[in-house]
Length: 206
Length: 206
Picture (cartoon, rainbow over the protein chains, first blue to last red):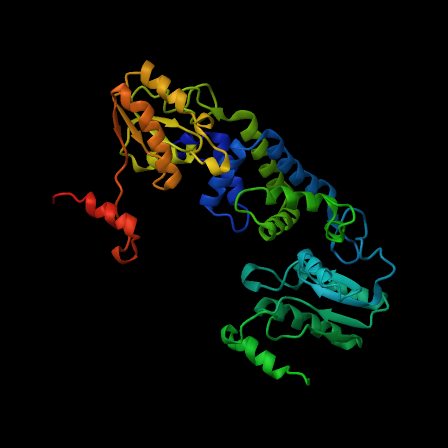
């Protein structure tokens, strides 16, 4: 913070710093950061402290599962610890939020593996930044029959799935990818050509 | 947080709580709150702690000016402490961010008075929730010649300006309101009828 910046002087230093810190969050621009900072300034003491405390608690208590890299408090996550889950299937996802999205469907009862990102050489994210070797080690040491590559259906997700496919193909497990097609509730008229061609190619008998 | 909620169990409690707290911020819905929580979970320790610390610092160190209710660290804000400001003018605004917006123009060199809100009976915000009495006291005790009512040019802002006008009219100070008209860089074609009629009514000789 430049001491000569009249804006910062007017803002008073702790408010300027809070705006700076909020503005470092993804999707929070300078205007939203200002709005949030002034909201917190006027919010009641308890609400502001609860937020600050929740941030610190997450950093102090939450870690990643040593097997699948989902979020956890202990060594293994609640899914890895659940003996009722199908131990022969691993669903590979990019981030822990994807685990939640799939759990909400209630159709999948296997295990997960969180890569913590996707390939993106432009952003400097390479194979070694993802939990790919740990996945291959699991295929060797666990009774895995199927790997579902549920990385995002976009360029980076496809590249990541292809990378993993190359590594896993020689190991003789079944490798699948979720179907591409029209989203439920969507409008055929507004579907992009890629989605529509996937939907036509993947058409099923009624 | 319901202990039986499987989503919260999957999320692990500190993450669920952080999502709850972030979701209480204005304009942050559940999806954004999740995204921010998982960003903080993966962000480096220093960044997360700096944010938590900035929130606590704002609550501990920043307060409101005892004269104009702008933000300040001490008793009076930097504008009230500046003897070069025109002590005969008060610009009345709704929130401290409005002070910044006006300071950025560099055309106003008087004082401010922050109401901390606008009239909104539907949200339970009445005259006594705003710093109106403090403003009237200032007009009595300070050498004020002009009050600029710079509340927002919307329904609540107009109602607030009208309320203050009623109180100040008997005191014999000049009371003004910023001009309404077409915004610079705007498109006449896209101007709403209210703005356009204000612009026509307020037309000036060239």
